[in-house]
Image 1 (cartoon, rainbow, N blue to C red):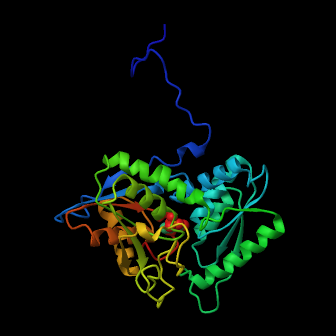
Image 2 (image 1 turned 180 degrees about the horizontal axis):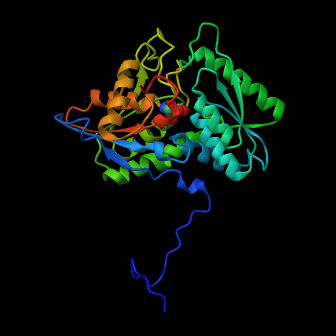
Image 3 (image 1 turned 90 degrees about the horizontal axis):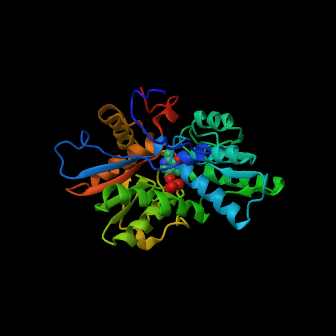
Length: 326
Ligand SMILES: Cc1ncc(COP(=O)(O)O)c(C=O)c1O
């Protein structure tokens, strides 16, 4: 008889995923006790960079595609197209690779090139759109996005593609309402006072805020925007070319967000976001990008003895070619 040396089992359980899609979600929630030493309150971060595509956007990609399969709006082998700053596209590229849909990602040339390479690695066709004259690489403005949107619409029509349309599709909301928020409530036993998130499409904020308010209307939910581009807060966009990739697109209102779920607006400068991302890595070993730094800097503004949750949106690895890391 064979000896089992490390452990004794009567039955070996099967725990094998049928695809990498099952590795999306169920991310850890970590307290930043080093970064907040000496400050009253608990800052908890959801490590979304541990998803297969190294960002939280894997969640919405899976939900949008599976909701569209379920309601028949996406047909077998139909091409899928989406405008993306890279993370949504990477998530969709992974989901489409596994499920067998051709995927076309339309992205501004202003976004980091690691993202285009990553999407191509998953088999995506990547269409890069030039920035408007005067725009700076690494700083994608609302004007740049308008051009990306036009190109996406053209491809949708020409190729008969299903457009994932993360700014409008309820799957983006549902991914975070059904999963991200629920995980956070389970991980904390519901003991949170506030939540904040840097918004792009607003899907994460909208889904989490809706679930949190339903669970306990006293949980306060804050929208995070770049300083000088706080359009949801009602300000004019005086500095649309900020460096916090993945959001702050000067788009207001955002269709997925219910205004009654917003308790306030927090503003973060490029410098604050960068400093927070660097401290996160150095003090906590958490490797996030610009918008994760923005979230942590914003959460620190409202800590004041409370338990605040925010999101580490994507991996710092996606910015190795830029100026985030020395
Ligand atoms: C790095 C990063 N941060 C923040 C966001 C914003 O998330 P949401 O679209 O859920 O508002 C995105 C969205 O693509 C992103 O890629």
